Length: 198
Ligand code: GDP
Image 1: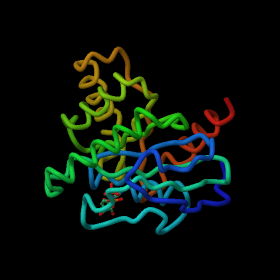
Image 2: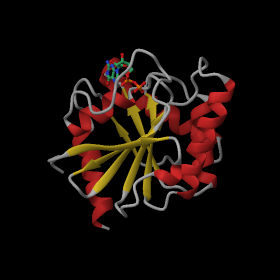
Image 3: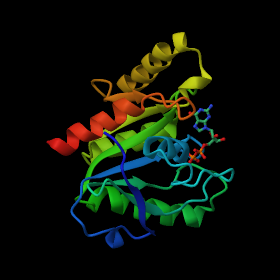
């Protein structure tokens, strides 16, 4: 897929106020600092479409971007950042769960995982939650340039093992990416193209 246009549409903290247009929607979510904004900018070929931030937990909103006038890229708040107060966290969780449980346009969630780290409980909890509510999802391993090429397969295999230990029968579809080197860009966009064509 060639990205011709990527346009910011709306930010809000109320899933019912998301755009009414019935375009297929792909949501990006992960722990704060996982590299979500960098990935969105890399995918869309924009330097600043999603705000990369030195202050994790800042973007506590659902952000809709319209891509090529035919699908929405949805940038969701990063989760699991300790400095967000308990109260803010509760609100955030409610509108995020509302989004995942009620948003009919959502066709696929991308859960971002830092390829360097062992499987984190909060990510596994979130993946299990998506399984429970039957939202289709893929994993995106980020920051692949930070480990040697030879170690990538081993890190993915370790993640698979953690998922199998969490009662998953197989590794979900996954992508290995680096925003620095544009790794995985073609594969991810081709996947979205394929799903849009179904
Ligand atoms: P977000 O909080 O998930 O939106 O994360 P950001 O996109 O703001 O990235 C967090 C930090 O990781 C920043 O310092 C980025 O420069 C860095 N980062 C993000 N993606 C990559 C990547 O693919 N490779 C490397 N080496 N650093 C990255």
